[in-house]
Amino acid sequence: MEPLEYAFSKWTWLRASLRDGTAILYDAERRRESPLSLALRFDALGRYESVEPPPSAPLPPTGWRVARQTRSDDGKAFVERGFEDTPFYARSLVSTSLCGERVAAMHESLSLDRFANPIVRVMLPFRMPRRV
Image 1 (cartoon, rainbow, N blue to C red):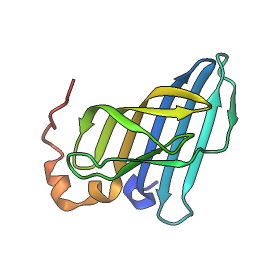
Image 2: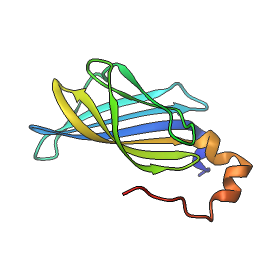
Image 3: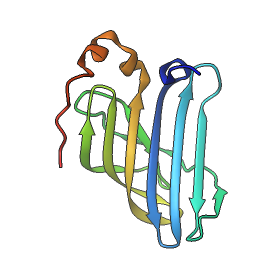
Image 4: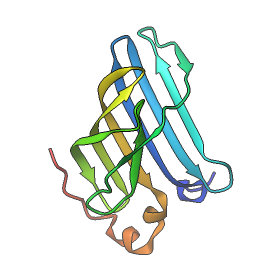
């Protein structure tokens, strides 16, 4: 067992409801292994299949300048609303295209390089304002 920041530098995660199920995307930059990209599609019974990850789609950095991206069939995605914006983590509602559908999806970005920064560690006990 080791702290997450020892194994990863950053990751993003996305979950979107589809007409006939759910799509989950996961991209991680690992420190000792090659990057990891997972794209899973779940049906209504919870069965899943791995699918080819769609192309990368850039998203603007957060207010704290955390870099972020997602994936989209057409390489385009948009932030519709921000929910969390901290020095190392962001949660947003994004608009993207997956499995041939235009969808609204929950998206998260985590920078473990930022999290490991001593200045950020000092800030951890203090609650960051949340947008609702």
